[in-house]
Length: 357
Image (tube, rainbow, N blue to C red; front, top):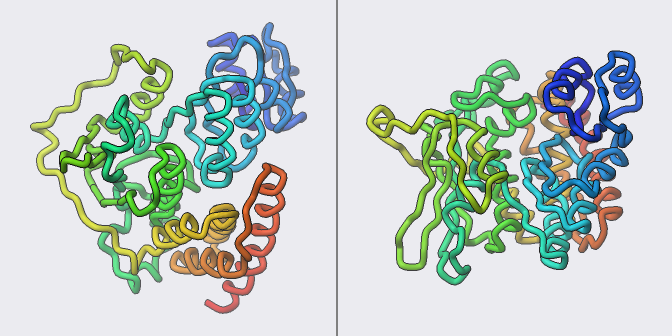
Protein backbone atom coordinates (compact mmCIF):
# COMPACT_ATOMS: atom_id res chain seq x y z
CA UNK A 1 0.00 0.00 0.00
CA UNK A 2 1.13 3.54 -0.77
CA UNK A 3 -0.28 6.82 0.52
CA UNK A 4 0.38 10.54 0.43
CA UNK A 5 1.03 12.50 3.63
CA UNK A 6 -1.86 11.54 5.92
CA UNK A 7 0.12 9.49 8.42
CA UNK A 8 -2.65 8.92 10.98
CA UNK A 9 -5.14 7.59 8.42
CA UNK A 10 -2.52 5.46 6.69
CA UNK A 11 -1.44 3.98 10.02
CA UNK A 12 -5.05 2.91 10.64
CA UNK A 13 -5.19 1.30 7.20
CA UNK A 14 -1.89 -0.51 7.70
CA UNK A 15 -3.09 -1.91 11.02
CA UNK A 16 -6.40 -3.00 9.46
CA UNK A 17 -5.07 -4.60 6.27
CA UNK A 18 -1.50 -5.56 7.26
CA UNK A 19 0.17 -4.97 3.88
CA UNK A 20 3.47 -6.68 3.15
CA UNK A 21 5.11 -3.44 2.00
CA UNK A 22 4.36 0.29 2.28
CA UNK A 23 5.47 3.58 0.75
CA UNK A 24 4.56 7.22 1.28
CA UNK A 25 4.94 10.46 -0.64
CA UNK A 26 7.79 11.90 1.42
CA UNK A 27 10.63 10.75 3.66
CA UNK A 28 9.20 12.91 6.45
CA UNK A 29 5.85 11.11 6.24
CA UNK A 30 7.61 7.74 6.46
CA UNK A 31 9.58 8.90 9.51
CA UNK A 32 6.36 9.98 11.22
CA UNK A 33 4.75 6.66 10.32
CA UNK A 34 7.65 4.78 11.93
CA UNK A 35 7.53 6.94 15.08
CA UNK A 36 3.76 6.40 15.38
CA UNK A 37 4.29 2.66 15.16
CA UNK A 38 2.16 2.55 12.04
CA UNK A 39 4.44 0.36 9.94
CA UNK A 40 3.76 -2.89 11.77
CA UNK A 41 5.59 -5.75 10.10
CA UNK A 42 5.48 -4.19 6.64
CA UNK A 43 8.72 -3.57 4.78
CA UNK A 44 9.29 0.04 3.74
CA UNK A 45 9.70 0.33 -0.02
CA UNK A 46 10.68 3.99 -0.02
CA UNK A 47 9.04 7.31 -0.73
CA UNK A 48 7.94 9.37 -3.72
CA UNK A 49 8.22 8.00 -7.23
CA UNK A 50 10.88 5.43 -6.27
CA UNK A 51 8.66 4.04 -3.52
CA UNK A 52 5.75 3.70 -5.94
CA UNK A 53 7.90 1.91 -8.52
CA UNK A 54 9.18 -0.50 -5.87
CA UNK A 55 5.64 -1.37 -4.78
CA UNK A 56 4.22 -1.54 -8.30
CA UNK A 57 6.91 -4.01 -9.41
CA UNK A 58 7.01 -6.07 -6.20
CA UNK A 59 7.15 -9.79 -7.08
CA UNK A 60 4.08 -10.54 -4.92
CA UNK A 61 1.91 -8.00 -6.77
CA UNK A 62 -0.61 -9.22 -9.35
CA UNK A 63 -2.58 -6.00 -9.88
CA UNK A 64 -1.73 -2.33 -9.36
CA UNK A 65 -4.59 0.00 -8.49
CA UNK A 66 -3.42 3.52 -9.34
CA UNK A 67 -5.58 6.16 -7.67
CA UNK A 68 -2.91 8.80 -7.06
CA UNK A 69 -3.47 12.42 -7.99
CA UNK A 70 -1.34 14.34 -10.45
CA UNK A 71 1.66 12.95 -12.29
CA UNK A 72 3.58 11.15 -9.53
CA UNK A 73 2.55 7.67 -10.72
CA UNK A 74 3.65 7.89 -14.37
CA UNK A 75 6.90 5.97 -13.89
CA UNK A 76 5.29 3.48 -11.50
CA UNK A 77 2.48 2.55 -13.89
CA UNK A 78 4.87 2.09 -16.82
CA UNK A 79 7.21 0.01 -14.64
CA UNK A 80 4.26 -2.11 -13.50
CA UNK A 81 3.21 -2.71 -17.11
CA UNK A 82 6.76 -3.73 -18.02
CA UNK A 83 6.72 -6.09 -15.02
CA UNK A 84 3.56 -7.75 -16.36
CA UNK A 85 1.15 -6.46 -13.71
CA UNK A 86 -2.54 -5.88 -14.47
CA UNK A 87 -3.38 -2.17 -14.12
CA UNK A 88 -6.59 -0.88 -12.51
CA UNK A 89 -6.51 2.81 -13.38
CA UNK A 90 -8.35 5.60 -11.58
CA UNK A 91 -5.73 8.29 -12.30
CA UNK A 92 -6.51 10.45 -15.35
CA UNK A 93 -3.08 11.96 -15.92
CA UNK A 94 -1.45 8.62 -16.77
CA UNK A 95 -3.38 8.27 -20.05
CA UNK A 96 -3.96 11.97 -20.74
CA UNK A 97 -0.23 12.68 -20.63
CA UNK A 98 1.22 9.39 -21.83
CA UNK A 99 -1.61 7.44 -23.44
CA UNK A 100 0.36 6.23 -26.43
CA UNK A 101 3.35 5.20 -24.31
CA UNK A 102 1.19 3.30 -21.81
CA UNK A 103 -1.03 1.50 -24.29
CA UNK A 104 1.90 0.59 -26.57
CA UNK A 105 3.70 -0.91 -23.59
CA UNK A 106 0.54 -2.74 -22.49
CA UNK A 107 0.24 -4.33 -25.94
CA UNK A 108 3.91 -5.32 -25.97
CA UNK A 109 3.78 -6.96 -22.54
CA UNK A 110 0.26 -8.42 -22.85
CA UNK A 111 -1.04 -6.37 -19.91
CA UNK A 112 -4.64 -5.28 -19.39
CA UNK A 113 -5.47 -1.73 -18.33
CA UNK A 114 -8.83 -1.87 -16.54
CA UNK A 115 -10.58 1.48 -16.04
CA UNK A 116 -11.85 2.41 -12.59
CA UNK A 117 -13.34 5.79 -13.52
CA UNK A 118 -17.11 5.16 -13.49
CA UNK A 119 -17.58 6.32 -17.11
CA UNK A 120 -14.80 4.25 -18.65
CA UNK A 121 -15.64 1.33 -16.42
CA UNK A 122 -19.20 1.49 -17.77
CA UNK A 123 -17.91 1.47 -21.34
CA UNK A 124 -15.64 -1.46 -20.56
CA UNK A 125 -18.65 -3.39 -19.28
CA UNK A 126 -20.62 -2.56 -22.43
CA UNK A 127 -17.90 -3.47 -24.97
CA UNK A 128 -16.52 -6.50 -23.10
CA UNK A 129 -15.92 -9.30 -25.58
CA UNK A 130 -17.12 -7.33 -28.63
CA UNK A 131 -14.85 -6.77 -31.63
CA UNK A 132 -13.93 -3.17 -32.47
CA UNK A 133 -15.67 -3.26 -35.86
CA UNK A 134 -19.05 -3.65 -34.11
CA UNK A 135 -18.66 -0.36 -32.20
CA UNK A 136 -19.93 2.82 -33.84
CA UNK A 137 -19.29 5.31 -31.01
CA UNK A 138 -18.67 5.71 -27.31
CA UNK A 139 -21.00 8.02 -25.36
CA UNK A 140 -19.62 9.44 -22.10
CA UNK A 141 -22.19 10.84 -19.69
CA UNK A 142 -21.57 13.98 -17.63
CA UNK A 143 -23.56 15.20 -14.65
CA UNK A 144 -23.14 18.77 -15.85
CA UNK A 145 -21.75 19.84 -12.47
CA UNK A 146 -23.21 22.63 -10.34
CA UNK A 147 -23.50 25.10 -13.24
CA UNK A 148 -25.50 23.06 -15.72
CA UNK A 149 -27.68 25.46 -17.71
CA UNK A 150 -25.69 28.57 -16.71
CA UNK A 151 -24.88 31.11 -19.40
CA UNK A 152 -21.33 32.34 -19.94
CA UNK A 153 -22.29 35.67 -18.33
CA UNK A 154 -23.67 33.92 -15.24
CA UNK A 155 -20.45 31.92 -14.94
CA UNK A 156 -18.38 35.11 -14.72
CA UNK A 157 -19.73 35.70 -11.21
CA UNK A 158 -19.21 32.24 -9.66
CA UNK A 159 -16.48 31.56 -7.12
CA UNK A 160 -14.73 28.52 -5.62
CA UNK A 161 -17.40 27.94 -2.97
CA UNK A 162 -20.09 27.72 -5.66
CA UNK A 163 -17.98 25.47 -7.89
CA UNK A 164 -17.22 23.00 -5.10
CA UNK A 165 -20.92 22.14 -4.60
CA UNK A 166 -21.22 19.10 -6.86
CA UNK A 167 -24.82 17.86 -7.14
CA UNK A 168 -24.04 14.13 -7.39
CA UNK A 169 -20.53 13.03 -6.41
CA UNK A 170 -18.32 13.72 -3.39
CA UNK A 171 -14.80 14.20 -4.76
CA UNK A 172 -11.55 16.06 -4.15
CA UNK A 173 -11.37 19.82 -4.75
CA UNK A 174 -9.48 19.70 -8.05
CA UNK A 175 -11.68 17.09 -9.72
CA UNK A 176 -14.81 18.87 -8.45
CA UNK A 177 -13.71 22.07 -10.19
CA UNK A 178 -12.92 20.03 -13.32
CA UNK A 179 -16.47 18.71 -13.20
CA UNK A 180 -17.81 22.26 -12.92
CA UNK A 181 -15.83 23.40 -16.01
CA UNK A 182 -16.47 20.07 -17.85
CA UNK A 183 -12.68 19.68 -18.08
CA UNK A 184 -13.13 16.42 -16.21
CA UNK A 185 -15.14 15.14 -19.16
CA UNK A 186 -12.60 16.61 -21.58
CA UNK A 187 -9.85 14.59 -19.92
CA UNK A 188 -12.09 11.51 -20.04
CA UNK A 189 -12.49 11.89 -23.81
CA UNK A 190 -8.69 11.69 -24.11
CA UNK A 191 -8.60 8.68 -21.78
CA UNK A 192 -11.32 6.90 -23.77
CA UNK A 193 -9.38 7.33 -26.99
CA UNK A 194 -6.45 5.38 -25.50
CA UNK A 195 -8.36 2.86 -23.43
CA UNK A 196 -10.58 1.69 -26.27
CA UNK A 197 -8.60 2.58 -29.40
CA UNK A 198 -11.45 4.68 -30.79
CA UNK A 199 -10.73 7.90 -32.75
CA UNK A 200 -12.02 11.16 -31.23
CA UNK A 201 -14.63 11.51 -33.99
CA UNK A 202 -16.38 8.46 -32.50
CA UNK A 203 -16.42 9.67 -28.89
CA UNK A 204 -19.38 11.81 -27.81
CA UNK A 205 -20.45 13.43 -24.55
CA UNK A 206 -23.99 13.92 -23.27
CA UNK A 207 -25.07 15.69 -20.09
CA UNK A 208 -27.11 13.37 -17.86
CA UNK A 209 -27.95 15.14 -14.57
CA UNK A 210 -29.25 12.08 -12.72
CA UNK A 211 -25.89 10.20 -13.00
CA UNK A 212 -27.71 6.87 -13.25
CA UNK A 213 -26.47 5.95 -16.72
CA UNK A 214 -22.72 5.94 -16.29
CA UNK A 215 -21.93 5.76 -20.01
CA UNK A 216 -23.10 4.08 -23.22
CA UNK A 217 -21.87 2.41 -26.38
CA UNK A 218 -23.63 2.60 -29.75
CA UNK A 219 -23.18 -0.49 -31.91
CA UNK A 220 -23.05 -0.45 -35.71
CA UNK A 221 -26.62 -1.73 -35.94
CA UNK A 222 -27.90 1.29 -34.00
CA UNK A 223 -28.37 -0.51 -30.67
CA UNK A 224 -27.18 1.44 -27.64
CA UNK A 225 -25.85 -0.49 -24.66
CA UNK A 226 -25.81 1.39 -21.33
CA UNK A 227 -24.46 0.60 -17.89
CA UNK A 228 -26.68 1.81 -15.05
CA UNK A 229 -26.00 1.63 -11.34
CA UNK A 230 -26.07 3.47 -8.02
CA UNK A 231 -23.63 6.37 -7.78
CA UNK A 232 -21.03 4.60 -5.68
CA UNK A 233 -17.38 4.16 -6.68
CA UNK A 234 -17.20 0.81 -4.89
CA UNK A 235 -18.91 -0.77 -7.90
CA UNK A 236 -16.29 0.10 -10.57
CA UNK A 237 -13.46 -0.63 -8.12
CA UNK A 238 -14.88 -4.07 -7.40
CA UNK A 239 -15.45 -4.72 -11.11
CA UNK A 240 -11.78 -4.06 -11.84
CA UNK A 241 -10.64 -6.38 -9.05
CA UNK A 242 -13.05 -9.19 -9.91
CA UNK A 243 -12.70 -9.00 -13.72
CA UNK A 244 -13.45 -11.10 -15.71
CA UNK A 245 -15.68 -12.54 -12.97
CA UNK A 246 -18.43 -10.68 -11.14
CA UNK A 247 -18.71 -10.81 -7.37
CA UNK A 248 -21.76 -10.22 -5.20
CA UNK A 249 -21.84 -6.63 -3.95
CA UNK A 250 -22.98 -5.13 -0.63
CA UNK A 251 -24.37 -2.11 -2.50
CA UNK A 252 -28.14 -1.57 -2.65
CA UNK A 253 -29.75 -2.40 -6.00
CA UNK A 254 -30.70 0.43 -8.33
CA UNK A 255 -34.41 1.19 -7.89
CA UNK A 256 -35.48 2.17 -11.41
CA UNK A 257 -39.01 3.10 -10.33
CA UNK A 258 -37.64 5.64 -7.84
CA UNK A 259 -35.17 7.01 -10.40
CA UNK A 260 -38.04 8.48 -12.37
CA UNK A 261 -37.12 10.27 -15.57
CA UNK A 262 -33.64 10.18 -17.10
CA UNK A 263 -32.61 13.30 -19.02
CA UNK A 264 -29.92 13.74 -21.67
CA UNK A 265 -28.70 17.03 -23.15
CA UNK A 266 -25.94 18.18 -25.44
CA UNK A 267 -23.14 20.02 -23.61
CA UNK A 268 -22.96 23.80 -24.01
CA UNK A 269 -19.61 24.30 -25.77
CA UNK A 270 -19.86 28.10 -25.59
CA UNK A 271 -20.19 28.22 -21.79
CA UNK A 272 -17.92 25.20 -21.26
CA UNK A 273 -15.21 25.23 -23.96
CA UNK A 274 -13.02 22.59 -22.27
CA UNK A 275 -14.46 19.77 -24.39
CA UNK A 276 -13.53 21.55 -27.59
CA UNK A 277 -9.96 21.93 -26.33
CA UNK A 278 -9.71 18.19 -25.60
CA UNK A 279 -10.79 17.24 -29.10
CA UNK A 280 -8.25 19.72 -30.48
CA UNK A 281 -5.51 18.20 -28.33
CA UNK A 282 -6.33 14.72 -29.63
CA UNK A 283 -6.54 15.79 -33.27
CA UNK A 284 -3.18 17.59 -33.14
CA UNK A 285 -1.65 14.88 -30.96
CA UNK A 286 1.97 14.83 -29.86
CA UNK A 287 2.45 16.62 -26.56
CA UNK A 288 -0.60 18.87 -26.78
CA UNK A 289 -2.64 16.79 -24.27
CA UNK A 290 0.28 17.20 -21.82
CA UNK A 291 0.04 20.98 -22.19
CA UNK A 292 -3.74 20.92 -21.79
CA UNK A 293 -3.49 18.89 -18.58
CA UNK A 294 -0.70 21.00 -17.05
CA UNK A 295 -2.38 24.29 -17.91
CA UNK A 296 -5.66 23.09 -16.44
CA UNK A 297 -4.00 22.13 -13.15
CA UNK A 298 -2.34 25.55 -12.87
CA UNK A 299 -5.59 27.33 -13.76
CA UNK A 300 -7.65 25.36 -11.23
CA UNK A 301 -5.12 26.05 -8.49
CA UNK A 302 -5.20 29.76 -9.30
CA UNK A 303 -9.02 29.76 -9.32
CA UNK A 304 -9.22 28.01 -5.95
CA UNK A 305 -6.75 30.56 -4.54
CA UNK A 306 -8.96 33.40 -5.77
CA UNK A 307 -6.47 34.64 -8.39
CA UNK A 308 -8.44 33.68 -11.52
CA UNK A 309 -12.09 33.91 -12.47
CA UNK A 310 -13.99 30.74 -13.36
CA UNK A 311 -14.30 31.73 -17.01
CA UNK A 312 -10.55 32.45 -17.20
CA UNK A 313 -9.72 28.76 -16.68
CA UNK A 314 -10.35 27.70 -20.31
CA UNK A 315 -8.82 30.96 -21.55
CA UNK A 316 -5.54 30.14 -19.83
CA UNK A 317 -5.59 26.56 -21.14
CA UNK A 318 -6.19 27.65 -24.72
CA UNK A 319 -3.44 30.27 -24.62
CA UNK A 320 -0.96 27.70 -23.29
CA UNK A 321 -1.96 25.30 -26.07
CA UNK A 322 -1.52 28.07 -28.66
CA UNK A 323 2.02 28.69 -27.41
CA UNK A 324 3.06 25.05 -27.83
CA UNK A 325 4.73 23.83 -31.01
CA UNK A 326 3.33 20.31 -31.53
CA UNK A 327 5.88 17.52 -31.65
CA UNK A 328 5.80 13.78 -30.90
CA UNK A 329 6.75 12.57 -27.41
CA UNK A 330 8.53 9.22 -27.28
CA UNK A 331 9.58 8.84 -23.63
CA UNK A 332 8.37 9.71 -20.15
CA UNK A 333 11.39 12.00 -19.81
CA UNK A 334 10.07 14.03 -22.76
CA UNK A 335 6.60 14.06 -21.19
CA UNK A 336 8.11 15.34 -17.94
CA UNK A 337 10.06 18.10 -19.69
CA UNK A 338 7.01 19.27 -21.61
CA UNK A 339 4.86 19.14 -18.48
CA UNK A 340 7.41 21.29 -16.64
CA UNK A 341 7.50 23.86 -19.46
CA UNK A 342 3.70 23.96 -19.67
CA UNK A 343 3.32 24.52 -15.93
CA UNK A 344 5.90 27.29 -15.89
CA UNK A 345 4.37 28.99 -18.91
CA UNK A 346 0.85 28.62 -17.49
CA UNK A 347 1.89 30.20 -14.20
CA UNK A 348 3.14 33.23 -16.15
CA UNK A 349 -0.16 33.30 -18.05
CA UNK A 350 -2.06 33.06 -14.77
CA UNK A 351 -0.34 36.14 -13.40
CA UNK A 352 -1.01 38.04 -16.62
CA UNK A 353 -4.68 37.02 -16.66
CA UNK A 354 -5.07 38.00 -13.00
CA UNK A 355 -4.06 41.54 -13.95
CA UNK A 356 -6.09 41.49 -17.15
CA UNK A 357 -9.43 40.21 -15.84
